[in-house]
Amino acid sequence: MAGQRASTPTGEAADRLRPRTRARGTRLPSPRSGADAPLPTPTPAGRAAGRTRVTARTRTRTRRPNPGATLLAALGLPLIGAFADELLGSAPGGIFTMLTVLGTAAATWLATRAGWWWVFSAIAPVVLGCTAGAELLAHGDQYADTKALATGAAKWAVHAFPVMGLALGAAVVVVALRLVQDRRQLVQDRRQARAQEQKRSRRG
Image (cartoon, rainbow, N blue to C red):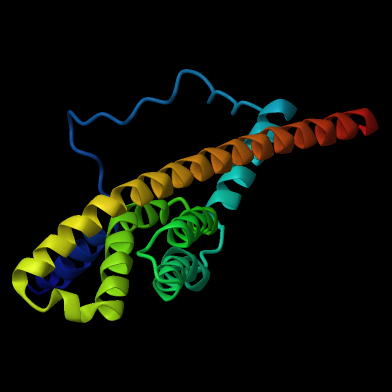
């Protein structure tokens, strides 16, 4: 009995140290039949095109927004034009129209592509607000009652529509010019990249 008790822990220790065998019926993953396909080597033209795309995207994304100058052009110039016309004794007319168109065009040029939406959507409120504000500050006594104010608002809206149309047209023209400029810059970058690749290939 003593010999059996002494041998039992030793046998359990040997069983623990023995490596476990896999269960019957399990299959090991089969090795791959062929070697891995080599990765395609990029051509010089592909590398040049990739660098050109990265350069164009970087220039588009890294165009630094200038909200102060954009706001000054979109709002400041129309305000100056409206009050200048009032000081000259006329309702917002020639000077207001000219400065509004110039301000909208300048704001569109200064804004980023994401900021174009804000410039376009601000044309109508800016034109109507400048017209109404200048008229109320200059002739506030004429719009004391509600009827006179409603009549004046209708007149301001009618006078503001041509100015809004001209400002919108100027913004569209500036957007087209910006797109053409970006396209030309992209073509120029591609030509420069191809020329650099040709120089490197000749040296190599």
